[in-house]
Amino acid sequence: MFSKILIANRGEIAIRIIRACRELGIKTVAVYSEADKNSLHLEFADEAVCIGRTSSAESYLNISSIISTAEITDSDAIHPGYGFLAENAHFAEVCDSCGISFIGPSAENIQKMGDKVKAKETMRRAGMPLIPGSRGAIKSKEEALAVAKKIGYPLILKAKSGGGGKGMRVCHSDVRLISALMTAQAEAEAAFGDPDVYIEKFIEKPRHIEVQVAADNYGNAIYLGERDCSIQRRHQKVIEETPSPAVNAKLRKKLGEMSIKGIKSAGYSSVGTVEYLLDAKGNFYFMEMNARIQVEHPITEEVTDIDLVKLQIQIAAGEKLKIKQEDVKITGHSIECRINAEDPENGFLPCPGTVEFCYIPGGKDVRVDTHLYSGYRVPPYYDSLIAKLITKGKTRKEVLTRMSRALDEFLIEPIKTTTSFCKKVINDPDFQRGNYDTSFLEKFLKQEEDQS
Image (cartoon, rainbow, N blue to C red; front, top):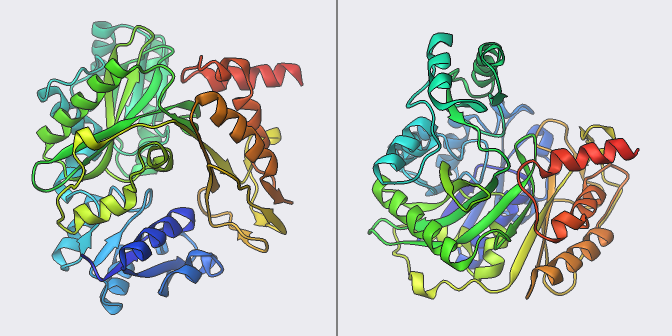
């Protein structure tokens, strides 16, 4: 097992990793930018080192500074969390060349699964059902039009690298496709340094289902149920739950077994998530794989009683999986609401500023992963996620009731947050019935606008 881990991240995920390390008896090194000098993760780590100025490029994405800090502090491993360098194959390679363990999959795995076109080819060979589309990146408008003619509209342009909705455009006609192609390529280039985009058939009213997997270096692999991540705004997840209201035991087994087949075919080792689109008839299609810990991992932990961050560290340390598939039991239900420092009444405009008062909800089966405290200044330079509120219960109804209560208790003043917005969503009659898809939030916001 590792003796010291450097955490190349910030905020709630840095604290989450520190907690797992402490329980494993591992010392930790926190890194921070000048803007994060008062961040809570610095207080909990054994050591803290400033790695650069405010911008991500000069700090959390500064590979040379992070590696130098790891060497100076005698860290034998680096945990990247999610975002930033978590799926950066070059970073994983640099760690390896410096004799530092990267807590995640190999650089080869990241390259294979992080590139969505390569990932689809890998999964195609494994027999995974795929959405009809281009076999590679689209290089010209003529090529785009030829693919559109073959698969038909509507279709969607997607960035080959990255995610979060960048470089993504839905098209219903040739004219829209030609104009959207250049825009999507430019956006992908700006966001990920890679202008390549590909085309897929646009599945209307799908659910976004992801399967949590874990695999060691010895050929052992398990799946830990699915998460429904269909409640999204501009392709960014807002609320997630497990199990999905749309997935029964038979479909769960099919999704899980197909995911294991896919990751074994790719030679994948670490924790990860295989993502699908599920249509109204129960057909599912491989979409992409996230080769890292997910923001929404806590809800899987709640229903399986398995610590995914510890598992990730143990696999990276060369340990064999101690859990077999028959040991995995899904018990109860869990939901996560992402709490962002944004103003829902003003187009979800980011709301950085000082938190003068903060009260964290509690009680039975209520979990809050956060770096907030009274007096903390939310910086304007990074992602607006400031907390994750997770509730668990024996039934979905119990979880929703508990979530509504916990959202009422969550007090963050005076900055604006999405707590009240999340409560409106979970109390919506259709959401209460589990009747939603990826278009749900767009319609919900339109109704809110019409009523105001």
